[in-house]
Amino acid sequence: MFKTVIKVAKNTKHFAAGSECPPLQKDLLRIYSMYYCPYAQRTRIVLNAKNVQHETVNVHLVEKPDWFLKINPLAKVPTLQLNDKIMFESMVTCDYLDETYPDPPLYPKDPWAKGWDRCLIEVFEAKVARSFVKFFLGTLDKEAVRETTEAINSNLEIFEEELVKRGTKFFLGDRPGMLDYAIFPWLERLPLMKNFNPDFHYLPKDRFPKMNTYIENMMQDEPAGSTVAVFDDHVAFVEEQI
Ligand SMILES: N[C@@H](CCC(=O)N[C@@H](CS)C(=O)NCC(=O)O)C(=O)O
Image (cartoon, rainbow, N blue to C red):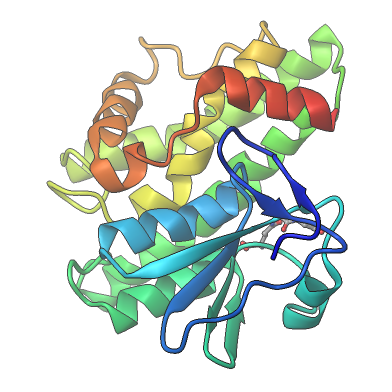
């Protein structure tokens, strides 16, 4: 079945150019993913949280198979497929899962509170996640690392203050919700970024007491924590990309 398979992470097969698309099973939800993609990780966490039966097809994103380009015109992961239906964009897929599998609900009931959590996901995406990309681009000089560090920390202050305001263990309450799961993949990657940029002093404990405890709590959460990559393998993957 695998014509071309590339190992991206230990024990994972990623379908690459030249491969055949594995046959679909009727009514079984499929996620096209890439093991180290933080966006696909969002959807994988929500699948875990909702205990949704599904299969994972990992796609090699450098040597994409032709069949994947036909499935998703943006050719990005995550992509969901159910029979002949396709859906992509991480938050679109996460919201679909939340509506289709309501237990446990991942948003606050109040529409304003839900809307505000969606706003914070957008803030995180625009102000924190995109700054991460700079660290992946290769060698930043000391000054650029300092500037990026301050940009990331000052934007994470919004989240520290929000935790203080809410007075809860997680953003949703006593268990994590969509906001928690949507930002987790980048919080997992903070130590990874430091590995490549030792001057990246993220979330100093005196300035971010809540966020530090919060991340420890998120790591203990089964749906999120079980998606955390082995650190050295993650480092090796990033090294191959840059
Ligand atoms: N806005 C998209 C971003 C997804 C994304 O950029 N995924 C990356 C992997 S982490 C990808 O598929 N890249 C392939 C490409 O851009 O060609 C989402 O939220 O799902």
